[in-house]
Image (tube, rainbow, N blue to C red; front, side, top):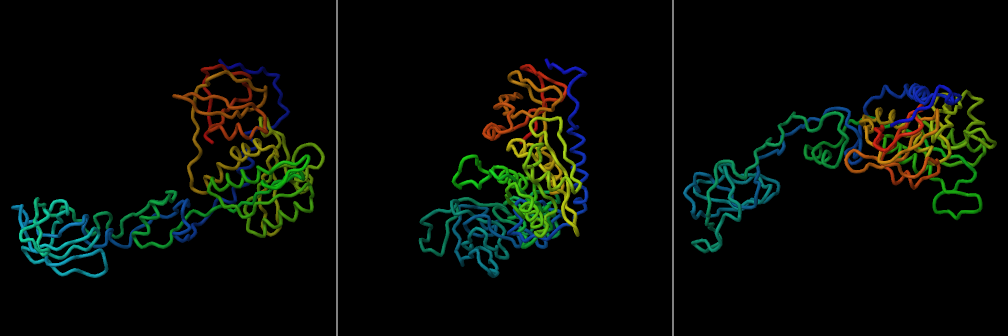
Amino acid sequence: MAARSGDDAPSARSSVDGYRERVLAALGPLRPRHPETVPLAEALGRVLAVELASPIDLPPFRNSQMDGYAVRAADVAAAPVTLPVVGEVAAAPGAPAALEPGTAVRIMTGAPMPDGADAVIPVEDTLAGADPASGDHVRIARGRAVGEYVRDAGSDLRAGGVVLTAGVRLASRHLAAAAAAGITAVEAVPRVRVAVISSGSELLAPGELLGPGQIYDSNGVAIAAAVRAAGAEVVLEGRVRDDATELEALLDAAIGLGAELILTSGGISMGDHEVVRELLEPRGAHVDVLAMQPGGPQALGSWGEAAIVPVVCFPGNPVSSQLSFELFVAPALRELAGLPAAGRETRVLDSAVRSIPGRRQFLRGRRTAGDGVTAVGGPGSHLVTALAASDVLIVVPEDVTELAAGDPVEAWEL
């Protein structure tokens, strides 16, 4: 059973929901977006903005479904029967000659059906060593009705019919259907162009040699990947030391590359050398500490002159940074990309958990059998491997300090 904090719970921190609304408002100008034409070869993963109609019948001509013999059904109704073979039709350009009554033509899968032929006898329904034994006859063991093993023109889709509906996220099977109709480009929902910047003099690119006091930059990798997963495009992925001049130059570079949104991590806490805060706060950025764990420090500002671009600033701790993106930015990017919202469901705790009064706790969790869920690792904002082992976030409300095994909880899909 849930234990709840009293009225004297800490209240100095700002509302999580209120801050989320401010971020959504800042991203509001990105919403009026017109479809963009994307070549089919580059359309994988894009969301179709406009219904796609076929300019041709699919298939475009009547063809054979099997390797075998094209015949008139009336000629094989009394099978077994032997018919002279008067030719062969391969899956190749051109129109075959019409089939005369009482004859057969060898035909390959996908080859055009001759006029006059209305059925196909599969190879396995013919007898080897036909009489006469010469190769210009075939012994047919089983007759076939009109239309058997024949694909009529338009039997998949008539010209003008809908190949793909608007809103589908294009997978290989969708691209195949478009290509079969001869379509070379599609109208897709445009991607938001995003710049991702990590700050911190201690950061190194993965693979470089670590020195004393240095760590690898996981935030840049994680946030850039999350941006792409949310249907947006990364136009810049950069890293700066705790130097305002470097940060200013990288922000300008992001604007120059057409970024419509800039995401930063690190440099917004209350200590010294908080370079993001030092640069953006005098320019109107709102820096706050939210009633949540992890991810308390947050900031929201803007950059640019001719075009003002929102800058959403996450904490530097890697778990805080990733969860902040999922909470405040991912829902908006997914909506703008035409993608469905991440799943949320109610599950049941496998074991008890505790939380800090006045904080909305986002525990890392993993689904278990049935509708169960178990917490993974502790609440620390540096536990990247615990986050990697999770598939949901367990949400503990601000006024709840303890939940028992068997209590229902809200679980957000990662």
